[in-house]
Amino acid sequence: MTKSPANGQELGTVAKSAAADVDVAVAVAKKTQPSWWERPVLDRVRILIQCADEIEKNAAVLARVLMWDSGSIKGKAMMEVMYSASLFRTAAGEAQRLYGDTFPNDKPHRMSIVIREPLGVVAVVSPFNAPLVLCVKSVAFALAAGNAVVSKPSTETPLIAVHLARTLHAAGLPAGLFNVVTGPSSATGDHICGHPDIHSIGFTGSTEVGIRVGEIAARTMKRTHLELGGKNPLLVLSDIANPDAALNIEKASQQAAMGAFYHGGQICMASSRVIVDKKVADEFIEAFVRRVQKLKTGLDLADDMVAYGPVINEKALQKIEEHVEGARKGGASILCGGERHEGLCYKPTIIKLDNTKQAPVWFEETFGPVVVVLVVDGIDEAINMANDTEYGLSAAVLTNDIKSAMRCVREIKAGSVHVGMHSFQSDSMAPVGGTKMSGIGKTGGKFCLDHFSELKWAAIELGEAPFPPCFS
Image (tube, rainbow, N blue to C red):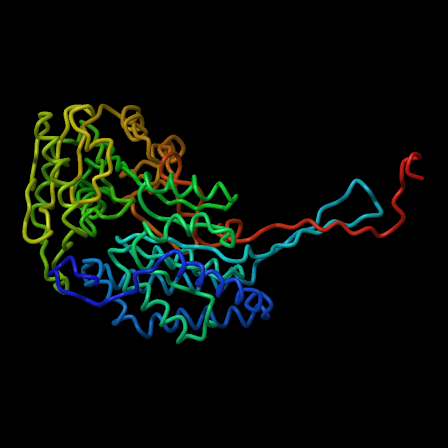
């Protein structure tokens, strides 16, 4: 039985799968995959486009499931649905670009060609915070590369994966290509990661679990794409002081608020560390607090003025409280929020640190509506503090100066750096993924193809190969 984090209402029942169910799903996928790869490429393209069309056709239903299954506000739920359709359209285009290659040989009587082939069966393990799009971002490209998929959704949000399966099958995706295994990870997760007939794992979730996924997958030499935790910096540089600039104090505070509190901070790329130059710190922090205090949060997910709803469960709420209490005990300033609102909702909270050692919240991922602010002296210190983390998923810099912006792009160690905007950005064509403890690999556009396909070298003898005398 799955319940809504917004009101505790029972939403439905899904299967409590075991290892044997994983075996069945993998066997079906393995049997079905060759016929999918043997189809003409334009046939596969047509079906992937139909999948996008069907997602859009059922947008209202899918968004409603997301709202109550994951606690998403209406706007965020609809964004996930439409972005998922976009991913399928991009994947359809990439299905036509599974290019191989040729290369010159040092033997004139030989031809060498490189062929790109699918892996076979791949697994996608998706999290609760964006359970549709973080599933589709791997599934669409895996299918485009000719693979079959076994999907394992979060136990917190299983319903959207079931609805996705129904939607794809209604679009004409052959049965057996997309298989959903629901139920506790303890009964299925390790088995999926170690299954000999699964050749790749796409996992989005915590760094702790990602390490375990990688360790198990390595025993059978599986490829892994791991998009893990983040403690993402947003740098606010001094040139935003100019009120007539394209990016000024007010606009910077808006970017920071959106980056920190969209979906209640339950986004791995959230702007959870704001690093602000001391020349604009007082004015920026005042504007930031004022804007955040106006944010409306609550359990009415259909209200367009609600910025975010509940966190996913009581355990997540307790972690938020521990981080805020740890900051209080360390002497940090709680500028706003710092307490529960209603149900599983927590008030938007800004914590100002005097130094990074005051509280664990500087280093540890909170995954909630909490942001820390640190004042620094100039761009050198700002970049150093941005890199003061084991994570490296995303980053952002708010500046009007192109030289400062490009220096940050070069020197900040992250999988993506966004200029003039907050840190959680996505594009179906872009390579999304982290560095350091934020993961391995990228998804998006053509950058997925190497993960979901294998290169094979074929050498063809066209003449008489000379042999050494001992073999003559």
